[in-house]
Every structure is written in C-alpha cells, then in structure tokens.
Length: 164
Ligand code: IDP
Image 1 (cartoon, helix red, strand yellow):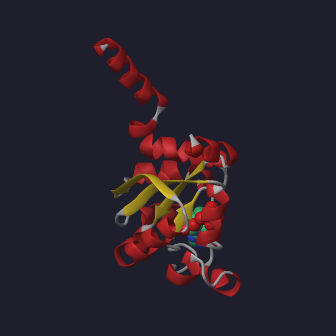
Image 2 (cartoon, rainbow, N blue to C red):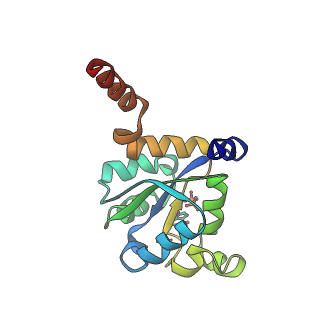
Image 3 (cartoon, rainbow, N blue to C red):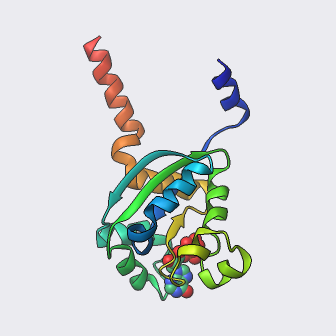
C-alpha cells in the first residue's frame, strides 16, 4: 500500500542507456555500480554485438551526418551493454550522469561525468542515453521489444486465460 502511494507521487520514467564498446571491456563494473548507486533500476539488460543493420537503425536520426558511417562501424566493433533504466526523471538524470558528447568539453564542464572519466574522443565516448522520452520508448521497444512489448504481454495473458 505504502509503495503504491510512493509510485503515485514520484512517477517512474524509463530511458535507454548503452555502455558503448570502447568502455565495456575496462569500465563495465564501475559504470554499472554508479548506475545502481544513483538509484536507477535496471529493468532490462543485455550484452550484444550489434549488427551493422541494427546500429544503422539505432542511430537513424544521424543518417545524414558526416560521421554516420564511422559511428555505425564503432558501435558494431565489439559488445555493447544495452539497458532500460527506470527512475523518476530518468532521461534527464542519465544524460547528466553521461556528460557532454565531447569528452574534452565534459572534462571542462562536468569532470565527474562518465564521459569525462571514460571517453576517448567525441566518437568513442563510452555511453549513450536517449535525449527525450519518445526516443527512449522507441529505442527500448527496438532493442527489447521481444521481452517487453504489449503484444508479448497480451499473448501471455491470452495463454493464461486459456489455461484458466
Ligand atoms: P549524444 O550521444 O551526446 O546524444 P549526438 O549528437 O546525438 O550526441 O551524437 C550521437 C553519437 O555520435 C555521439 O554519442 C558520438 O558517438 C557520435 N558523434 C557525435 N558528434 C560527432 C562528431 O562530430 N564526430 C564523430 N562522432 C560524433
């Protein structure tokens, strides 16, 4: 009962977070620990090497950018950790934890941020986070749709109804 009231006053939000290939090998534990210590719930998590097609789809908003092919290449060069993070104000809080896109800027303006600490350069910048709620839900659906989509839930419900 008490828990339900807390959820009512502090509505939860979800964002999509990725530990990119450059950071996963060396900094996985530190990054995961910081996520947990900051009050996020990791609602979904999987380690995967993205195919080129998946990386292109994931970053389709950047298709026209000069760095797009480099970005796709980089995102497929090794395993990523893909996560749906749940917390009040999750989108904004995870972006703040990441810091600015360019680690040179991050080191100046947000020295505690993950990118200031772990990013190599503006391309290999250690982490990703959705920039708004719509992107968050779209990317969570794209990467985890097989386990969290409404369709999946309703098919389980149908199966349960059949059993009853
Ligand atoms: P964000 O990840 O901070 O939201 P975006 O501008 O959305 O930054 O760019 C997406 C990703 O593309 C960045 O995280 C970075 O990996 C890469 N990127 C952004 N700008 C550049 C650039 O100028 N050169 C190379 N790669 C870039």
